[in-house]
Image 1 (tube, rainbow, N blue to C red):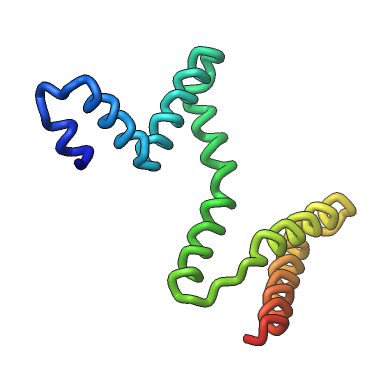
Image 2: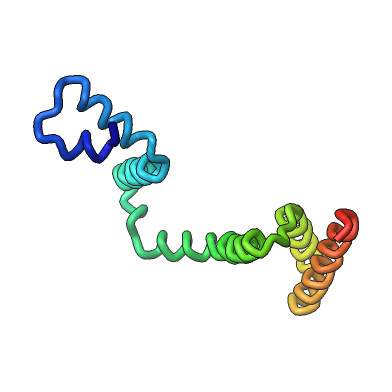
Length: 131
């Protein structure tokens, strides 16, 4: 029996309602969405600043690097040329960039160095995999 059939039936027997709830909870996306709503409601109750525009702006800025990597990884996974070392190369290049800037290297030179070293790291990984 499908979840839709259980939900459409106007007068479910006592066991059918429980089956309908279980069927809905088995859909991962709905469960995840419900958890996100519960967490947002809890955070709103804890702090009045959670639903502020400043918080949304800060979250958006913080998620941009992850979103850029996710879009790139999606393209690579779809094309079949994926490379699982992206996370480690990204972490290493971020660390090197931070250390370079802290030690007085201009940001533009740090970015150029990181892009080139990331590219070299990716090539070395591909060669070790035989591609």
